[in-house]
Structure formats: C-alpha cells, structure tokens
Length: 74
Image (tube, rainbow, N blue to C red; front, top):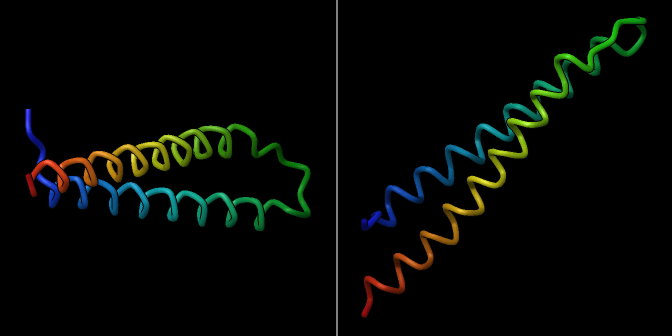
C-alpha cells in the first residue's frame, strides 16, 4: 500500500496539533487545581497518554513521509 507524502504530512501536523492542545489542557487543569485539595490524576493521566500517542504518531508519520518522498524520486 502506498501513502502519499501529502497525506502523511497532514497526519503529522494533526498529531502535533493534538499533542499541543492536550498539553495546554493539562497545564490549564493543573493551574486551576493548584490551591485545591482535589485529585486530578484521573484527568491528567489519560491526557498524558493521548499526548504520548500523538507524539509517537507524529514521529512515525514523519519517518514514513521521508521514505515516501525518497521512493517517489527514484
């Protein structure tokens, strides 16, 4: 199966945007809960998982995009 570099670039940038939004959300939740005695682990842990998975997706899409560009030139 062949994936176009344009499609992989779109996936890469979407994953980067998702990770950035999740990090902003985590920072906001931590800021709002800084002086309370509430446990925010239930919110932050899944958000961190999504952030890590988005970063991994962006990395894989970047590698595949580079490979697709090289094979297209040959």
